[in-house]
Image 1: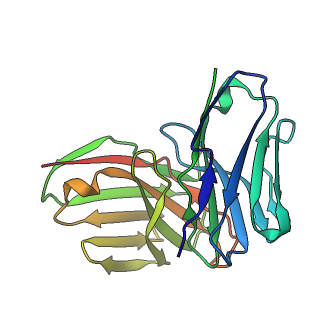
Image 2: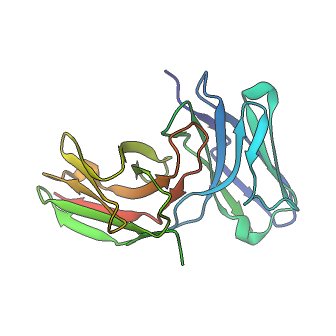
Length: 111
Length: 113
């Protein structure tokens, strides 16, 4: 079974620029998550989708972050404009029942 | 106060040692407890999960939950250099798909050959 795919793996941008991350979950997994993991910390949930719908986006900074999940499969997370404090690894995960499966993450550096 | 507290380490042990990793939590609603392993520059990987109080064993790994003390542990027996990673505890109030996981900060473990 293929795992969760993410791209790009690394991205360096300047502050105030925009960036987008892509995620393809495990086939058949209805629930998709985006997490932010700052160096030395545990993952923090940004947004959770159940099929096409948003279940939880309470911790998403909506003034600069947006996310969508197309046709209940792939998802994109966008940051516009980026700030220095957005430097982190952005992890995508998917699940069928309890237990989330994570992708390798996108390491974002904002300079 | 954070909902989940985890000693960040770093923890360094010799090969073959028994390792104990711990988390405490404050939210009584948590019923499902997980341990994830995260190698450098990789995503977290689900290692074990347990429900409510008790022990669960899987090879060299034992997960222990004490709900009365709001304390969970992961024991690694006969630790190997390949166990060197960051270990994250995670907790959920529900078993259903889509329930939010709350993670600890992670403990960085190094097993020296």
